Length: 470
Image 1 (cartoon, helix red, strand yellow):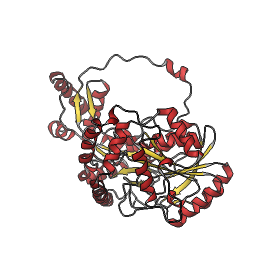
Image 2 (cartoon, rainbow, N blue to C red):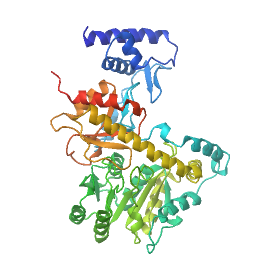
Image 3 (cartoon, helix red, strand yellow):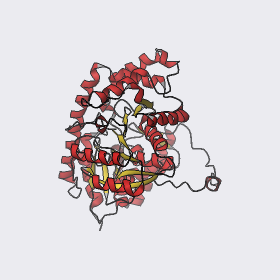
Image 4 (tube, rainbow, N blue to C red):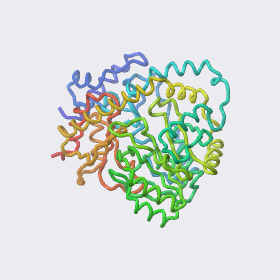
């Protein structure tokens, strides 16, 4: 029986099942449908996508596929908005793969956040209950953030600062609604629309998006497994006249790169000589596996490093709390920008974050998290080596959430990604992580997502997607 006829038969059967089921009923899993109707996973996914487009079912991430409680409304023609809004100039996708939900029973190697079982839920839930009973629920927090939370961020950095370098204080800290808000504020306050910003390539897609939103002009500097070449950074700063360089010196996303102390020192010297800022995004501070790099901000006592640290990925996605640490007028401009944008960060979320990170069990959780991430990383590496020999991982990350994998040059990346999705595997296309033209075929493969026991199955699907069809 052909795939088309099998798909039509399955779609008809599912529509009959849905018509008889109550609203909110959960559909059988992809595996169950494959077994019952003797069709391929591709056919099941195609049928589910067709029914989703018709508005009769909906997928809930990590839960399953359900009969919609309300039928989709008649489509509204919003085409007039295209002319009214004009060209956006947007290059990055509106919904990058790292934020997209999984399709039903698909294997997800694309997530930008750790799986739920890797989060400190036993600390977060009591903290939220305590915050709801506190003054934080009804009060308005200071614009720069709760003093106790700002002191904690400052103390975390000061604890790693060597003697002789002036440590930061609580006044230097501005609490922001997640790192995305921090990056947008830093780009607007320190760079400004139409002005140059130097940025690693590849780099975090959220930073690329923030740069576009801030209207800055991005100048990429190539970055590999060990980070960018300090001489190239120095040259591009001189050629462009840029006064800011955005980078992730520790466990860079997506490459996993860690700058060694010599490279870090040379880059910091280049930034100082240019009279510029280094916007250091330390997003993976809590995700070390085999290394614990010291932030560059600990080596700076003249205000050249603007340090960003987030708690959203390590505490809980709903706890959108991060901080920017900056000195002097730079801090004041950043504070003014954040105040104009959001006035202040929820006092309840700040109280929850502070409660969690000051619990004695927090350090225990981080040690356990490092071991768990290491186990998942190694399992995914073994799975790729055993079942996807055409996928290369040039450098094993010593921390972070994902592998940066290289595919053969002759394959079409978009085709590979789509084949994987049709066969029940979601992967992150590397093109989304380049602020300029991609330098090859890459995938970001997250090992911190759910169901690590399915890594071997996912690796086989990926290898099949790379195999030319007859």
